[in-house]
Image (cartoon, rainbow, N blue to C red; front, side):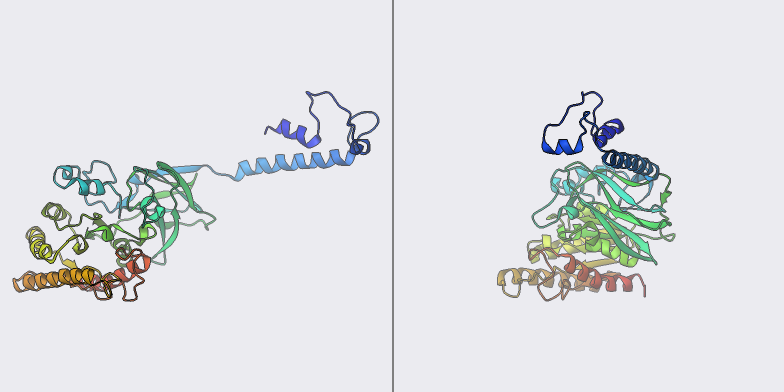
Length: 405
């Protein structure tokens, strides 16, 4: 509405229309016998309201700052094991398309585990991101986890959750994550979607706020590298920052690389050949849920460890058992399969130790997601509680490996 039109509405008069006498009873009270003039009180109130709106509008224009957008590729990116990817936010190098199965290649285009770190003194933060797939959610995962973003801030040397970007469109999404902060320089981290890919991600701050790439870790810091199944990829956390590899990254203040491939973490040699290209601090292998039988565990585990050990002779390797699904106390067939696979993994582990393999570690399934039956969303995939429990168990193991207190 224009200001001139607003003036017309408030004063009840349109200069383009002839003055018309009102014929109802109310018009006899409000209009004079001479024509259409309103009582002075009404005109005065209208004029005051008009002046107030003009003042408010101009003041709003003065204090409102435009949003300035920053491509996160210019900031500190974590979670990429390779720089030679087809699309920037892919998780495998472009050449892997000819090396891995199509299912793995497609899942590698999900941005699970990738994050951007930056510092800013802004009093508000927005995120704008473009999704690659129109499928925003899954039956057992929220849209925030599948296609949203998750923002954390470092306060007193500890990462704290700030807010999430909730996707509501199949392509471009833009949301203000937090506002009304006391303006001072802080470090932030934005986790990208777990089960969708992104073409672009931008951080928005008020014009004039400073934004810069966060400092990298101490010299020589190497990432934790996770290889596994949908559980490693993040099913079924409620938001991206609650996948257990990401929780461990915050707990241990280390970068991570998430190579979880839903339904396709099968200890395949072509993936092992790619894993050794990453100079890791630790390799965490959590593949058993995607191996069908104990025979597969017995066959594939030694081959995977052999490839890792030949190329990375001193890097610790952690083997993780299949989690105990909450219904295995009563579902005997599932109980048997899980038990047999875990027994096979433990046997292989002992044989490898006996053969002289060094820096090999083992995480049993006992209480890995808890024993109360509350640790999954669907009987298979951990929920937030299950992932928190997994992270706690694995943190203790990784601290010992990394010789941390």
